[in-house]
Image 1 (cartoon, one colour):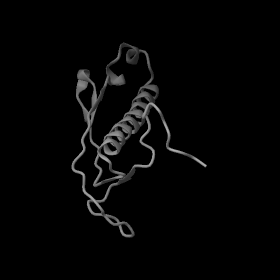
Image 2 (cartoon, helix red, strand yellow; image 1 turned 180 degrees about the horizontal axis):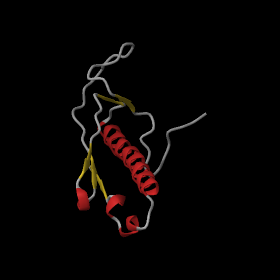
Image 3 (cartoon, one colour; image 1 turned 45 degrees about the vertical axis):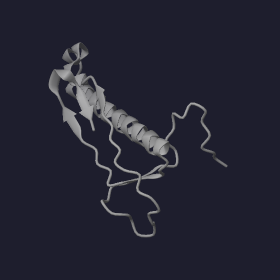
Image 4 (spheres, one colour; image 1 turned 60 degrees about the horizontal axis):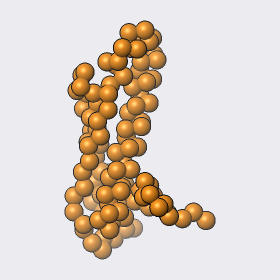
Length: 108
């Protein structure tokens, strides 16, 4: 059996993310808590000094890996906020990446 006990509450285990704007079939809403948003910022590997000696493929792989990690971090943070508010699901989840050039990558 798996339990959702984590004394540091770093996990958002148990929170379901639905990308549809309505409640999916088979589920029912008991309570609407409100809106949840989060912002994650990180340096863009395309603008690091090491990128000058990387091959284009290695540079793209570094960026794709960062996108994957930032996506997971954003979902974890939103999931933690949902748990703090007493919820167990996110309806209408949307994720956007903004490439800010030398400033970095913003995920919202």
